[in-house]
Length: 299
Image (cartoon, rainbow, N blue to C red):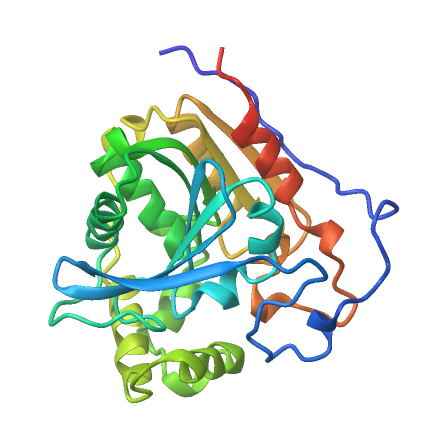
């Protein structure tokens, strides 16, 4: 199949256009509340999903955009900075996956395939037939599985720092995961979990299940990745844990895909909580680029 090369090899974000005003969100990096100058109405609820009670939040109106957080995270720690921006033009459905945040656990290990099935069930419960999906880190791998296992519910996908192959990260990553301990988990993520979870004793369980899932991670076969026909935007940072070579490989395997390599680390481009710095500026986020991708008419 002829590959459609629309690669954005490197996007240099112009900082001169940034608005220098600081909002209340920079006062405390551990403040888990969504804080922006524009108030966005939010509704939240739980849904019975394949044996768990899945927590979700809905913002805004318009075409559905489902947000899937990273490992060890909550809705706010991954997407707190970008939700108000997306919600200006979209119906944003942000979820918390098995054992994370406010969502309950089940007596099974975590898997990206189960994540995909859980999201598909949630959307069925919400009477949403089709949506766009944006997953970050582990959520990006779950999003890839949604496109593989449930293509009928997918319009477009954004894979933010998603892993599909073990060689997509440096070798030290696997050594680290083999020795992962709760005390080494970023403090911001531990604080966020404890702020929202009904049972804070679940923090250790969540950590251990996340670590086990990564230790046992197996390559997604090329044939499955190639089966993805949905328009796809692949995003990583140039200092990401995910290597540029891996992002390029995924771009080549997914025929209808675009690739953006953004200056910064793992999650800088969406303001993920562990990346925030005192000089954070909203205009450095990649929301306009994502919206351009989502709104583009396919040829």
